[in-house]
Length: 159
Image (cartoon, rainbow, N blue to C red; front, side, top):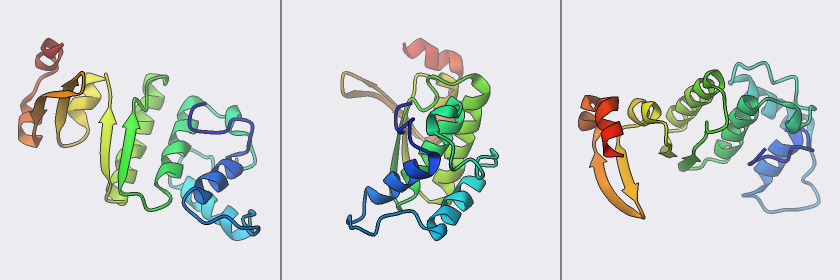
């Protein structure tokens, strides 16, 4: 449930996310225009959630919540997206969906993304660099060309 308010609706969660970078006033309610905007954003996910904006966030699956959290994170023209173990508690299918959605959002919004992961396959598959760190120090920094020549076995040997 991290990153969302499980007892609030999907729409309320999006409203809170939309307000985090705006000046607050007495006119911060939810208009029909905002509802339509949220439904359009959610429709991009192709998860059938656009008609569930009045459902409580806690009633959704972990993968659905994580996908919505990604949308909320990028809705205010951010430049950098930090993803710290975004698939840690998800089943493999949901994890793949979330990472695919993240990749699309990063590309569409031209974002710099930092993925912190212990999933070696994701480390090789996504992004254009691998940086291995230990206790705040960089041990290895592989550029795109080096990364694509890396095998899972070589990566496992690092640890």
